[in-house]
Every structure is written in C-alpha cells, then in structure tokens.
Image (cartoon, rainbow, N blue to C red; front, side, top):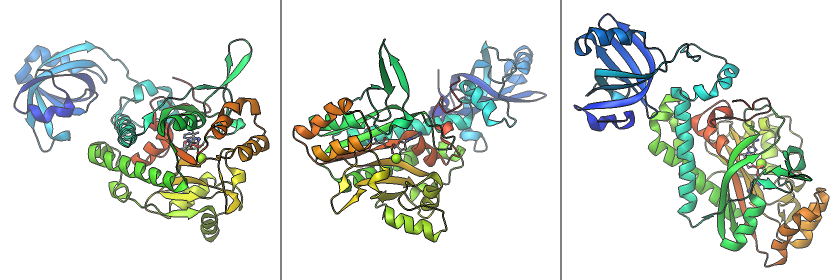
Length: 430
Ligand code: 4AD
Ligand code: MG
C-alpha cells in the first residue's frame, strides 16, 4: 500500500511503500540505515541483510544522496526514532541515480546554496520554511474569505507608479509604450472596493530596490485588503486580526516545522490583540531615549524599526508619520495636516515593518494636489481620480509582505529563504 511519511502513524504494523529520495545513508556490517524523504517528511528505513538477502543488501551499499527510490516494509513505532516511526525494509527499488550531489551535510556558503536553490529547497530546513509559507498564505486567504472580503485580482502590467517612481521596473510594452511591473495593487483595490465593498488582492509585486538588506526582495508577494467606509482605526483592527489569526494557525498546525527551525514558539504565543500603538512622534522620542541617531521628520529606517520593535513582545502599530515621507495617496490627518493617517506594523524581535497601510485621500482637490506635488503624470491617474468624482467615501487598507511575515514567524535572518526562488539585486538565477 502506498503511504506518505506525513501520515505514517496511521500505518503502524502494516506493509507500506514509500516513494521518495535517499537523504542520507549509514551502514554497519549487516544493516543499512536509510534516511528517506518523500516531500512530506523524513523517516529512517532499516534494511537488514537478513530481511532482504545478500544481493539486495549489496546493491544498497552504493546508494548515494538524492537517489530516487521506493522502499517497502513494515511500519514500526519507535520512540527513539526521528518522527517516532521507522520502516523495516523488505524490498527496495531504485528509480534514478544521483552522483556527486552538490549539497552535502557539510556547511556551504549562502551564495553557493543560492546558486543551487533548485536543489537547496530539498533540505529539511528549507522544506520546513516552505511549509510554513504555505500555511501563512492559506491562513491569510481563510481570514479574508471568512470575513466577506472578495478576492479581486489587480494587474501586473501597470501604466504608472503606486509607491514612488524610483523603484519601478519598466517593461517594453509592444512598440512604443512603457509599462511598469506593479509595485502594489492598491490603486485598483480602491476601485474594486467601491464596486464590492471589501476586497483583497494577493499577488507578486515588484520593486527595483537597489538595497541589499535582509528585508528586501525585488519580487515579493503581497496581500492587500481594501475596505470602503473605513477609517484608520478599522485598518489597524483588521491588521491586528490578520496577524493574530495567521500566527495562531501556524502554531496550531506547523509546530514540527517550527521545531526544525528551532523557533522559540513562546515568543509567537504572545502575539495576541491588542497590539501596542504609538504615534510617529512617540516613536521618535523612544528612539532618542535609546540614543538612536534618528532625524525627526524623516521616515523610519531599517535600524530604527529594529530598535523600536525590540522594545515590544508583540507587533507594534506606528501611526501618523509625516505626510511628506509617505505615498501620495495617504489622507492627511484633519487635526494635524502635516501628518498622514497611516500605519506601519512592526514585527517584534527586531523584524521591523511587515505591514504598511492607512486611510486614503478621498477628496478630489487634495488628491490632485498630491499627484502634482509628487510629480506624477496626471493623465495616468485620471481613472483613479474618478473614484473621488463618483461617490467618494472614506476608505482604507494595507499591504502585508508575505516573505517578511514568514521570515519573522520562522525566526530567520533574511527574507531570501522564505520564497522558493528569491529575486534580489544580484540574483536572477536559477
Ligand atoms: O509599505 P508598502 O510599500 O505599502 C504599499 O505598497 C501599499 N500600497 C500597501 C497598501 O496599503 N495596499 O509595502 C507593504 C508591505 C511592507 O510592509 C512589506 O511587508 C512588504 O510590503 N514589502 C517588501 N517585502 C519584501 N521586499 C521588499 N522590497 C518590500 N517592499 C515592501
Ligand atoms: Mg511601507
């Protein structure tokens, strides 16, 4: 009977066949210990000369790392075994050889591994991360679908910038047009929210970021909800609800993966609402107290976010940044017009911004002014201004970067391990 390692516990005492790859082999005179992986997990298959006969035993003597094979044998519970179970092999079939597999158990440098990312993703650690990523994405979808949000896809080829003109990727669009890869689906989300009330988009976004930091990719996945008839407060509550529910889901279903990653899960257990809220001014004061060289009036930099988010045991919401450092679409606070009704959610343990969003400028004249002040091409935004011409309402939303979220939940050093094929300043291969 065909089985997978993930549900091996349901097959104790029975003969099963596993289809997978050889991860590692250790042999004593009369026994081969084969660590087999099948994509769902790792298990030790014990092959004794007595059980399989001399000939089959001898053939297994040369099996090397990543040989594809099927093993058949009885499942046995063993408290000492990795995962709690072992297989006593009765027969083994080899499908494809593997010679000189380049990723051995010894330490490799990260560039070496990234050059072989298509193989690196087979490792136990990488498969654990990719499973957590899957769970995060699945929890995000369930969260919005369960709250009446309509998934409404936004285009990837776009005519203009959403998040500043310095990080656009131009694409030749037929003979004489330049398109740009989307930086965010937000502007279309706003139109979709006026049609459907509560919407979200979830897709790849692109930023020509020349920065080589542990938080930046040039291609990343972002989920963006947008709500009509909503203010900054509603946006913050939604962000809080999303993060608590995503973290709770990963804790509920992905403990084994978090254990492989040696994640301190007590830190994740503290991620419950309400999250602390700070204004930009309060954040600036905290930075000054910590002796962080921060210039009031500028955007928070990566190291400022690190210093702030180290001070809290759960995500912190920073609101009311100076309007001048934020995107053109942000609504100014009527009580202090130099501040924007915006929020950045900083993940704890120094991870920094994982969510950015806020309330949108819903007044036609003020929005036109902002477009001019940012030197954006007005024709490209005519359709967007229509939303303020025909039944404008207060509205808002946010974007959460999946890779930053996964990086934090897994406790990783760098976002590059959270996506199967990271795209960065110097990395377009494989
Ligand atoms: O703060 P950002 O730029 O906000 C927007 O794009 C808004 N239009 C979203 C909205 O309100 N609908 O980006 C949102 C999030 C960041 O908080 C971060 O998690 C992620 O996207 N992000 C990146 N992730 C990886 N690499 C990059 N270069 C990223 N830039 C942003
Ligand atoms: Mg941001």
